[in-house]
Image 1: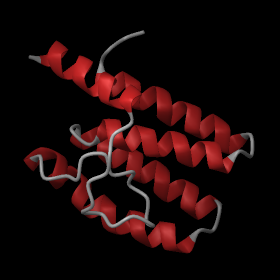
Image 2: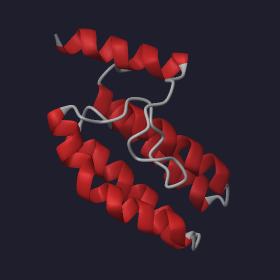
Image 3: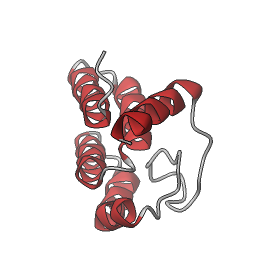
Image 4: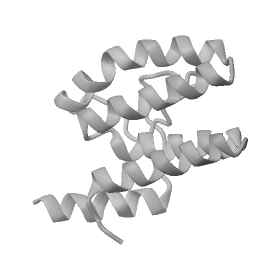
Length: 119
């Protein structure tokens, strides 16, 4: 398995798309949340995750999510570029955008492994 962080984000984005297409919206959201945690250090990937979340919100008519993702789209890239993001935050509209959250061990291991590969 490649350790490139962008690859890890894109694997989860693809799996989320497949889950949504298969009608498993809960799995799609879970994969998007994981992709969000991994994407926070990467401005472009971070924005792509929020775009995907926005799209799922639209397709499922979750209007609170659509509004929340629209707001997060504005701050995602600047937050990543300045490293001013709440680590571990799932990126969903039901969680305050500024709240740090615990990072699951498997995701933390990916973040650490890819960080050490970049340095």
